[in-house]
Length: 466
Image (cartoon, rainbow, N blue to C red; front, side):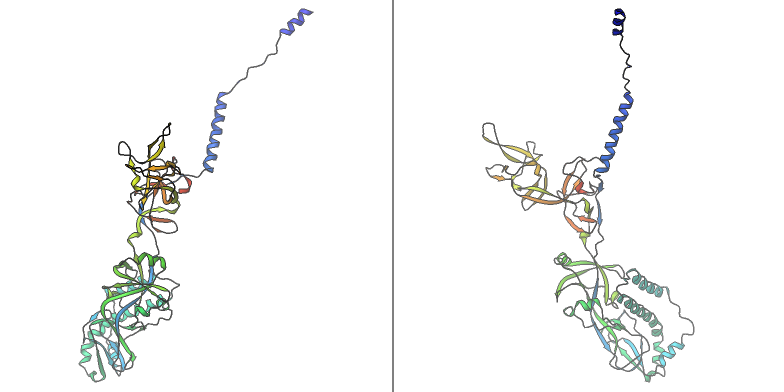
């Protein structure tokens, strides 16, 4: 009995070995890693690159200006029905016949009766009318209703000029006929360009200019037509006697500061996309700033226009185009430029920092430093290179400079080398989305550089993994 108990004590219960599935463990580790990576990806700020290109901004440089010329209104010397024979917007010589005044109106009846067949417009006539219409439609602003009236007057003037061709071809026959006793002739008092309209702005000078006149709220233009009944002394036409003319427009203070040192400005006329250089000057009157643009050519192209839509073309509109989201500001230490020195191989720029040996004797150590900008004889250096309280030793002298002054720079992070390298920029123009910065600067950007699209998502010298 005792032997049986001893044998039972020696018998142990069988336990199966632990079966570890190594593949399942590896899969679990990989799964957890992928979850962590995905969560980190969606939580972290994504560093997107942007390639720097040359470009320009859609800066609002368009203005409406008032045209001032040396123009003279010529009164009619007789009463009756007036008919014009000089072509509008063409130059006439002194003493040239401009119009006739018919007391009876028979000349107009005869001219009308001569049109036995329908009048056909030439290709040149149609092109002129199409130009007027397309210019109006491309620049039409429903808020500025006065443009519609100007368009109406321009079309009427163009049609009048076309109609005058036929009248001019018939005048010699009527001048020698039986109607001479009832017809009076008007001649140009001086050489100049003929315009068949008046608006009350003819005697306006730059000293008279006000914001109300520029807005044209009460502007009233009277267009003259053939067979109008006219009285002696009434305006019959006007003549522009000089090629020099100017445009006055209102500008704000920021544009004034931009242009106050500019002697000449390049101007584009939206009516025909013609460009011309103008001498510019600033006038301040009754709290309003006016820009005066003086021209000495192309007066005849705009002789019938009192208001012109213009665009100021600035050379600084073009440069390196970058998004505003890339622009950041950084703080740097300021060190005088004459403290700069070079390492043993003369290739590494840096400064000599004061140091001490173990026995307390003074010495210097060369600190390689990146220069980010230079203004007013001061270098902007990275804050990580020094600490406030460090002393910089001037080469070949005992002069010391304490690190204390700081300055801020505007720039972007260049990632051409795989890390966030700060580059200082000079902003020339800016709108809501983009900035135009100066190119080819010593410490700045170049075309085709790659920068961080959102500058606030990285720190200086961060490694960039795209």
